[in-house]
Length: 175
Image (cartoon, rainbow, N blue to C red; front, side):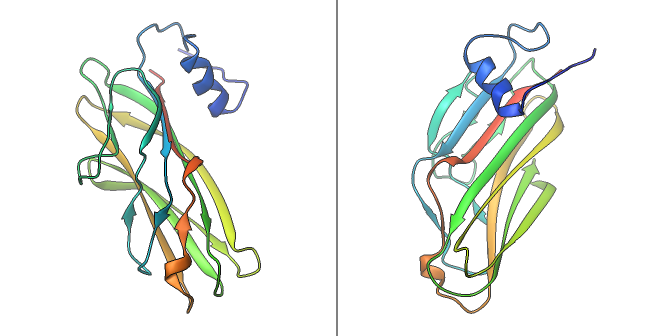
């Protein structure tokens, strides 16, 4: 099967949300969630689970909501094993300090699949990153996102991820 996508993945997800289907499937899981409030990260060199409290849609009720360790993850539903496209990203800011590195990682069943990092200098005071990846999932497998920062001598109480649609986690089944 050949899949040809001519627009960015976000447009494909928006199309799925409108009720259209991709590759002729009528029952493909898809979701889009985002952080409804800022996520403060007070400790340097600590991984924080990214909390997605607002759901734009979840076609198969696959996103677990809440604040427990098992929440804020996509769980592959029964009958829908296969390849999935995931998009995740965040908008980070801080008000004081010097250079920093900001990282996000996506995990499958607790194992790191991808780790992405970008540098931010003190004159910018903000950064935005977005990544996409394809993951092969079995029924019951779960996928989740974590965030970390490495600051160099600045006030950590002023560092946070912006809540809103720039801090997102999205996905849909390809095959």
